[in-house]
Length: 475
Image 1 (tube, rainbow, N blue to C red):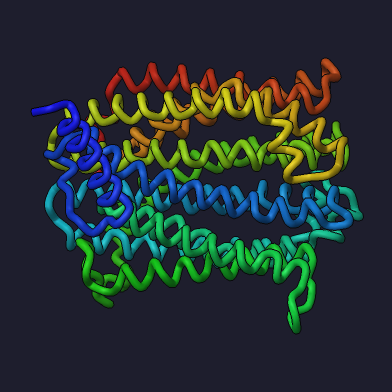
Image 2 (image 1 turned 90 degrees about the vertical axis):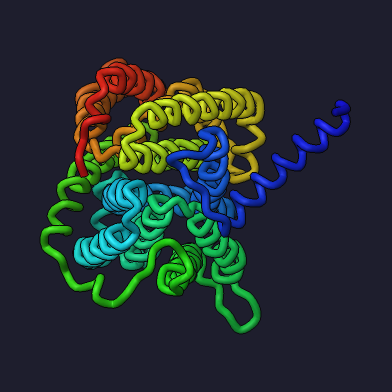
């Protein structure tokens, strides 16, 4: 066979795999097929899915960053997103439980039990989010003030916060239902739902913020409306594919009847998972508040700008690492422990390569990236410093994400919860406070504490992964 023929065959296989990953309409057995191909089939749509989630934040940041009172607007958006990370935490915690249980049942070749588990997870999400939405809507201004916003910034951003908190059910369902699809091995549907939601957000953002024809200019509030409407459309797309009966999960109305035993089993996995991300979220909230009180409105806006851009790169890496959760869950369900371990190693290798490339890009182009989102020179200076400092830990972030998803995919949600508790609350927060307040480094001290703590968390995760408790968890 000639070299040209080999190259054509290789290109053909790559193109076929990419097409299969994006379309998601061809079944693949993740418990027996090629591990590399399995990682690629899961990772490509998951990376694109998380890329779209990060674009939500950047689209809002771009348009509000060019409003007249941009420092107030950026601060309101950033602080609101910091609080909404609690909603993300609950959503991710429940979706992790759903992914773990659905993946395990699929690995055991029991799609009926997988479908029932997914629907019970949706019931749990509805109950929890009702409380969060009401509380967030009523106390929107108090939340911004508590986060360190000035009175002027809080008054300016209160309607944005009310809409975002009031519409948080869309956030939770978007994460949860995507978790159900990922557990079943259908990452393409999850990707497409966020693409649709994002396209709607990109179209609606400039229209609702600046006005268009008979549509009035809502300013900052328009960004919240666009995001909430976009996410709602994404959820409707998910529900259509969940109930059309064509996928591996066949849903019938009786699955929505509360099953207390199933709910208890899900809560047992989800509770530490929620706590795991609440711990991390509260740490980020504290850091945001610390930057706001030591750096003022411009310091806060600069940090939030850098954080948004960092998350634009981090979320795709999180999407790639999500492949480990599905592969570990399904292979443990099929009693294939060695394949589960190989899947973790392969996913981690790809994530390290990705994050190393992103580190170089960030260090070289940080100023250009920041200047695209804000015209304020003071905000730009602070944001560049923050981004270049935080990116130094990207490679460790990449490894840590894969290991955290490994634990969660196996149903071992307590291990990463304890890692987060010690890493964030007993190390990162005290270190950030010490550097910014005691050593009077201000926001710079917070920026330095982030990569140091994330590196320590990753090293602890490696040690606990090697102990192998995750292999013996029953779900």
